[in-house]
Image (cartoon, rainbow, N blue to C red):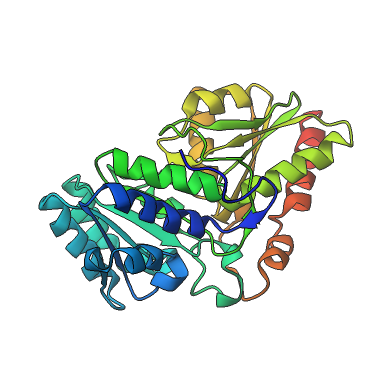
Length: 320
């Protein structure tokens, strides 16, 4: 387990966790090969490239080719980790992800960096807002969205230790560190970050810190809210969602379109026939724009204040 580099409450990007994890894993496992589509400095895979240049490859701006190359390497016994911006890699490499990786259940690990509005000034063409919704729909893929630096390390380790296709999204912007060290991470299991009785905020990725702030703000108003961190989007922790649904109100929070985590939670509520109101925080049938990351969250109703407001609205509606 990795610990000690950053303290709880400090700010660091989850993409840094991915880069550091690759180096740690690469030191022990010679079969790991890392490739990047011309953005290694941004995705942080360059850290592996500097340490192990003989096992690192720039493929240029050719995401589809990179996915196919990774599939071929995996069939030869290597463990390829490939990365680029989520917006580019998932959209341009989707057919190869489906056929060359998912259909054949091939051991390829994919990391989409610069996810969501937190990508900021790069604007709507660079902000990966659809990746969770798209990849969770592909059979055989497991999908992660770590909440902080240390959880990104844990998710990267889990991708290596388990065979088959994986997709993980990371964030460009520095966000609050929630863990003191690399947490215990189990595929398909959520983490209760805070207990509450009145409602539940189910969040993933960069919006988990915002969810924690919202819960703290609500507690000062006498509202007790739990926070569930779903770093594992697929498989989702169905039992944990069903338990939270017993409170009668769930607010989901994700940095992207609401058809990722939000729709996944909606499916659980519907299929379990739970008597629970659902409010999804995220982009609903819209793109973002260029701007400062946290200013964008506020403008599009996705920051702590907006999440808190949605909980209050939901509780008031539930009373009628």
